[in-house]
Image 1 (spheres, one colour):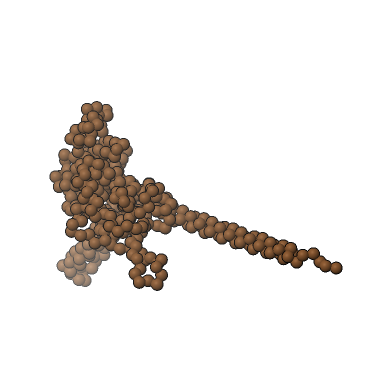
Image 2 (cartoon, helix red, strand yellow):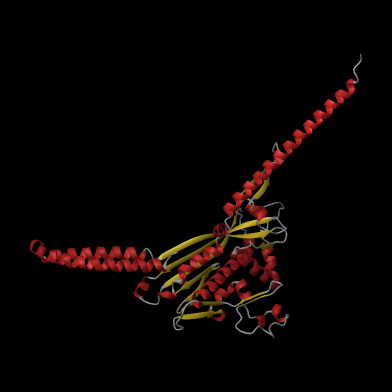
Amino acid sequence: MKHLISKALESRGQIFEIAVVATVIALGTNLVAARLDGYFGKTAVIWMGILLIGLGLIYFLISLLKKTEFKKEFEGVILLTGETKSVTEIHGYPLSESLEECLKAAFLENDALRVSWEQVMFPEKKGNASDGKEESEAKDSPKSDVNYYAIVKSEIEETKQASVALLNEAVEFCLLKFLSLHLSTYFDNRDNDETKIAILERNDIPEVLLQNRILSLLTTSIEDRAIFIESGMHKNPPSGEIHAIYGSNGAVYERFHLTLPRKTIITRPSPGTIRLTHPRYTLTLSGKYHGFHYQLPKYFSELYLSHEDHEYHARMLHLEVTASLNPTAFLYFKDWGYYHWIDSFVDYLEEHVCFQHFLSSIDWNSTATRIRATIIQKMRLKLKTEQNRATKLEEAKAKIEGSDRETNRGPLQN
């Protein structure tokens, strides 16, 4: 799908075509104007020409610049699980799987992060809050079995900001991981000029980015982490270049690396936001939790989630990608192949973080319809079976009662 680079370059090509046609028209107009100066005077014709040229240039610039910005927002979902106070993966949904993996690894090595996490992300009251609904009892209701559900936004108290910040850092880490994986795939599948690209390692990123505790912990070398030293892995590391290590106990090492066009600068304007700046483009990634609950689709928690604990708390994550081309980018006429990854990354990000896209990929709407049809069919069969059983019982009862009446009547007297 065309998003930013393809559309902008296509627009530029169309404008050049228009410019050629406009030049031909201008030559014809000039010939006509040469005949008009005898009627209006040369000065008036010159100013009229300047005005028309200016209007044409303004129109071209507006047509070009309006296609140099792109923004797309996604709704992600994080699933919290009842009494275990942990993140639960949703099978096949990459964002959920990645969040579960990185938070589990962080809590394994840093108990302080786990304690901070548990202070906010789970409601105190017990009860089924699955599908993102909060239940409240109906007081003074004439029917005691009536419950009410509200979709709410939880207020984030000042004392709970630390836990929310930790979740935002985990989301930020996942976004960087997805970006790294996509860039590696994109540049590994093309012939690259090493003078045009650079690999940013952990030591190349600004100190402010390492304020992300999840990123700082999981990208630290295994020689500096007790959990790997105790296992002895640092003495006999795998041969070759290590990109990641995953332990059966949940431990994780991720090598931080971003393959990007040279002169790209990575910054962190605010927690949860990553920005890539280059003379040709600016790309901003953002992922944050604002306290909103999320209502899972019907039957989803009962039939898709395969965990024993069914007290699911679904929370909404707001994710956003913004890309723009700098005005001077159109002065470059070659090497645009090193920048088309921006368009493909938008599609890649949607596939990995958008919950609605995940539901579409597993065709949940059709699945839920079939489930509903099956449930209704079973209910009807059950009802029909019960009705047939009741009918047979009535017939049997009537038959027994008829037999009793015949017995009580006795033999006929002559």
